[in-house]
Length: 408
Image 1: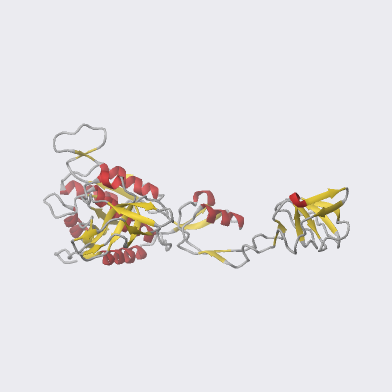
Image 2: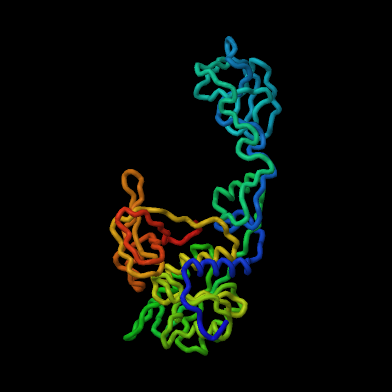
């Protein structure tokens, strides 16, 4: 890097840099039991080694029968097959057997007469609802055939996907290791919640917000003491963390003020990938390498922390784990006209609404200041407004990014 800092880059350029750096620092894999897999990123394709179901079975409680249509006088009952061990029943034409849901289908069976439609008189079975061939039968491989690729490396494990792995008989899966993360907030004015404030001091809201954003991603962040506005202590504490964690995330100290020491520190002691992104809120975003760690320097205003983490911070975490599955996004119609008077990409706060026809609408919030944490707390999405000044009329379809963190 030269002595001069790079100029502001576009949001897309910043995203591309994060993708490239994360791909080059992909985390190692580990094998974990299924019960610990929720939200983890799969590191290997999941290919079926058995069929699901792995034998023909009954979809309903009732009677397995052979001989369609129903013989005169009904089917003769010759046995029973319950879920569990296969009794090896073989039905001849005109015969039937009791069966329960999930039980192996007797050889020769052509259909299931459900219990509610059956009449039993001694050893004879009759019905007024004539079954058709294969009624209520689950054939082997109906859901999955051996050799089918069911999940891909980069997919996120959900409860249903973990259930699928269990159904295939897999006790564990290979997943990407989760990054270790150190969290710092900066500024002499910060005091932890619960402590009395002197004039000019504020409570540290970013620490709780950033930690819980990370916890919602399944990570276990370690919060370090608040960094004072002292360049030497900042250097010492960050360098200590940089040799113990995969990722260091800071809040504050990344702008161009007299007390914003992080850009110069990264420039002199590490490597700066970018500083300042054409986005609102969150322009003074800093990203680079310090020691063995990546460093993501978020702005100090709380709404900027929220916006930069949800848009680029999570992207970095996903990239380190090799996640390829896209995050959830919605599209909704504006309830009011938005006048955008600047060139940066904007992430405006808003609230989703759904009408009686199932159409999503989004109400933009006029409180756009990056310090307006109460306004952010009252909303549930970020409206994605592209670069360039312009007017977005009511009814315009806008992309919306959920504010709630999580693995979706």
